[in-house]
Length: 450
Image (cartoon, rainbow, N blue to C red; front, side, top):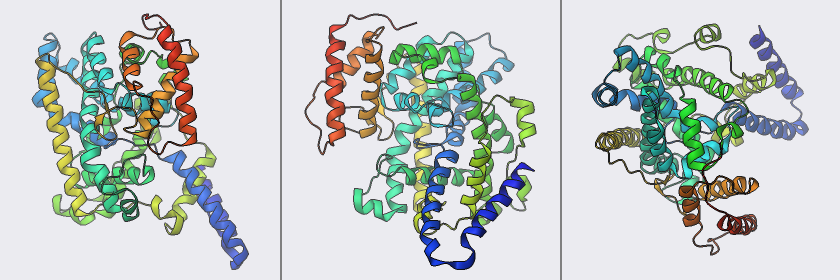
């Protein structure tokens, strides 16, 4: 009833705004609609800065589970039973999506920015080093899958696809467009990638269910994050369990949306791959009652107003200022690019697992958006995140900053020459950071805060 009432309210809002056809109200209607779309965008769509979203990351785990991951876990923990390994699989899924936790509702963007742009390789290696049991080690393997996928997926797929789908961005930035240069377009391209995977029959309904049931190794996450960044996870998330539950609930809603879009946009391809398949067999559904029976009620739902806005947004035609917010099907060229990148990411993950088994895993501290080693001036979001980390540590007087973190920050800021096209805000930020680093250099090295 609540949703039906919201829909009726939305219809009244739209009809009352449009009736009488008065031109003097048209400008106001458009302005309000633009504001509305922006709000809905912020409320209803997570910041998927990844090359792949949840489905693809967890599918990356599935692709190597039987052939590589499961044998590796059994070798590391020979006493593990089949049930133990099956349970550990949920933690591998959780590790594969943990880097995005902060980008979803009720998260903390700094958390995800740090693991994407600052000591990204060190963080994953620390997870392995600090893992104490089967589930924690499986969780670390999942995080390694995310590292491999992002570092390949963005530079060879998403960054090249965005300018093809959005020629205006190509005219402005060239043949590669990063997330910082086209955030909305990146989100839509990444969503279209998932639609391609769904339409190709990559996933079965039971796989969707497993994906939603991911687990998070919280003690390991807290230890590794503290050791890598000198910060406490609990200081970034008001309620870690609520954040994880809300993340899971968001995933449980995103998957049905992807299957619905795939069914309507690529029905012919689906029918060719699965002749005779019916909509109720293809489109995944999980009611709120079913969700809560299995996964509990500890999550945040959008408020009534947010749901009304989402309904109104769906009623607004995707023209003019709304064009960039609508789903856009990828071209065959882009589909091919994505599928090739997915295979390459899987190969890279396999290579990393081989290195892990041999005891020679050595991950570069890359910026996930470009796949390049993180360096000052290389990528604006990395610059912003390093500065925010230094600000956070400075507020605590740099108490408990571990030596590897101190060394990493010092290397990043080894050259304080002005950056090309640096804005006034960036100059002010760098001046502040320079003062804070002077304090850091004067402090003694200690163990992380506990």
